Amino acid sequence: MTKVITFKNRSVPVHYPSEQLSYIELLHNKLLEMEYNFDFRKKWKRIKSVEMIRDVAILQYTDGTKLYLEVC
Image (tube, rainbow, N blue to C red; front, side, top):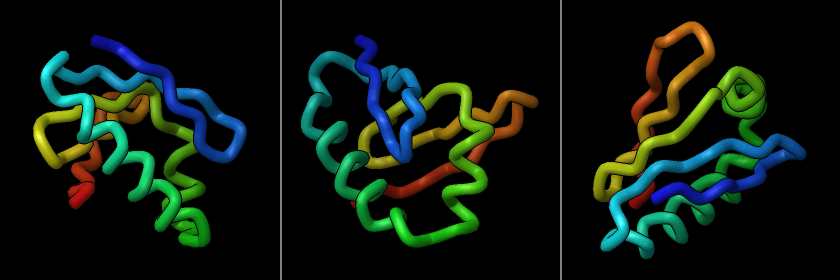
């Protein structure tokens, strides 16, 4: 399934298996923790999409590289 999340005025699609809806809440909480991390905010501007695999968010950049973020 796909859900769109917004962080710092930028919307990004999040792809996740249908049975793992609770991990979307964990991702949202982790983004709130990272709100004052300026390096992450600069990286967020280049994120194309997010894929959730259990408790790991795979952030894919526009150039194809990936950043793995543990959301627990």
